[in-house]
Image (cartoon, helix red, strand yellow):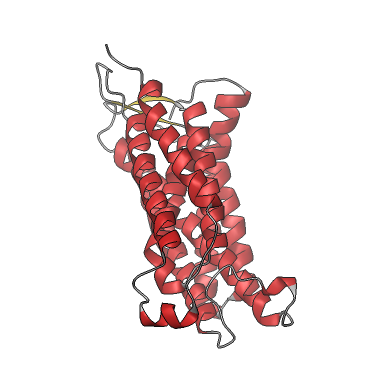
Amino acid sequence: MILSPVTLTLWPSALAVLAYGLASVLPDRTAPAEVAAESPNHPPAPERATWALLAFGWLAHAVSIVFDTFNWDSPQPAARFGFAPALSVTSWLVLTVYALESRRLGLSPITRRILALLAAATVTLAWSFPGQEHPTSDSPWAPLHWILGFASYGLIGAALMHAALMRHAERQLRARPGSPKGISLGGSHPSGAPLLRLESLTLRFVAAGFAMLTLTLLLGAWFAHPWRWDHKSVFSVLSWLVFAILLIGRRQFGWRGRQAVRWLYAGSALLLLAYVGSRFVMEVVLHRPVIS
């Protein structure tokens, strides 16, 4: 019996949601300072259990993305995309960045909980709204166009995560000792070095996302005949312009801090509207098929 794509994604999606959910609610038990200093590469047992759950959820999430994207019983090559799978891929990529940088930046359990809950929500959303099939036989470059587009979403999402941590670190530095604003989301301290590192990483991810978005637009203009100035194209170009202005302003005028973050938020909102927003309206609100 051939299972439908939605059925194939049920079990890995359910396992991913369960693992993410458990990782987000496990109690935080950190080792004493002297123990942590002696063995920085060997976290306490509760933290190892949390990371094991995150790793399992991450793998199950990847399997659900594969099953949800490729149509296994279609007579012609086709892929399924939509607003919810785009959010799911984005959260998966952001979690990947989090896992790679958490040790170096000392990101706190609060950050882990937020990201795990967001990932669980996007997996559930992707299973509920799997999108629609798009034939890949029309152009061999179409899959690369989609992959680059999702990569740009993931990189900008990682930039947003670092920007949020940077803004919180700034508030920490200005907060009075013992005030609620002093609660740590990341590994910042009064020296300011982690803050500068977060700011540098934020702009690096913006630059990488901008490069992926540029390639996405170039490929889209190449194989789209004719080119259509629909909502997706307009918002994508507008987001590209905003990110370009941000990077130019950073390089030529030294934009940083709140000014840079505002431009990042504006470009990210436009990019979100470009694909996720337009697909949400077409798929959920209007119930109309999406051409590309």
